[in-house]
Image (tube, rainbow over all chains, first blue to last red; front, side, top):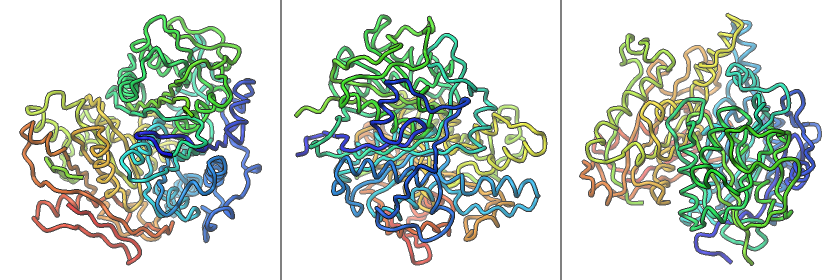
Length: 390
Length: 244
């Protein structure tokens, strides 16, 4: 049962610091149960199942076979395919789009650092190309359909959803598995520290005392389809735009995000007043939160009634995976009937005029949810989700 | 997808004067970024007179296998030598940094993304660009590819046989919807049905040719007037064909 231009979320899976399924993480968001410790979030790899046997084959050899990012990804993919129905994805012709900024870096970073230390320059960098992560997934899944790896910084996940939607709409594929994953490494941790963006405490999105972000590991998978049977949400529109402002800061007025949200509304023919809740990127960096708020102000007005929140204090910022992981959460609001509060936010910054949800979850009384994601290099993306009409 | 090719360019990093690379204006930019700025500037200037708001109209897809690997190396080297992690080197080390630099330099506000696909990054960049037009997201799109492996890291890849790392190249091709090219009076280098075909074996050891030079090869094929498909075969295990 496919609808013209209809793109549906048929299955979702999540591996995070605060939950090993979409439902578990969502409920922990409602309970404000965080997995962040001392400002960062590491996934407990010991509790990840080795799921390669579920798929076509194990990796033949090499360090990739045991890499954490692959285990996390396969756990998330397995959940997505189980919820969608294992026969809902044909690896021979359906699409696979992945989003990551560092791929299999755990396999080569130490080797590079050690080779610099001993001046040997004998590191093994065979897994260094980002595409190796995608190739490893394809080999395990036996995937031979269209594939792509998107690495547009932290907006990559949102972009991957957009491209998957395009592939389905244009008939390139019928279904598309969208996967985002990230593990923390020295490059990322020390790089963000050098930019002075990290908070050692639990982050406080939109709070007047916010002091930075919590980086975290995570993986998420969504099975998108033109078939709406059993779907949890419809992707009404998904767009992405540059803002051309700065290498590491979003444009202060949120111009890029505003453009993306306006494109969502125009394409879907949904009015701004119909959007009930916006799950924002809300990293708790001073620049991000103001930029997002200003984008929303332009569209929804100064005294907007749209409820907004960020769940970064629960699962942390999973970089390229964030757009997919948090779209999973946003879609799950339609299943649960509530949307989460902005955990660990106490006093909203006076420059942020949106209706930030504090303290407790709220009932979802509308049909449309917005999800925004921003990234370094002026990347902005947004996904408009709708309730599936039976 | 029927497309018009309206601009192509490539530049070897070593062809850029040292005083430009080391200028104050470029003090935070890598050599690849300076090269990208140079050819993107030329491309945008050639379109500016014909297309209003080209900065908002032009979509960009960046393709790279290794991104700015030299910056990742520098990030850790600088820490070893001076005990500090450089924020500038970190931001430059991201695969998305060239697109970020180009978009900020030219105030681009259209669609933009960076993709990476191992040895097929060039082909995937071209295909993703065409897909954006096919999906109706834009009327004109720039595919831009770059890669550079520091010489001292060549031996760290077991199957290295990429293009000469001392001569890293940035290349770009701009495609437009044929009607859009006509309406705006764009000079068309070639027009036709564009598609890319692959036969990929899912071998994760596919590091034989580790750069995104397919875009450069595509430009050379167009410039030479050779007929398509342009075909690339890698050790008999994998091939791509670009039809145009």
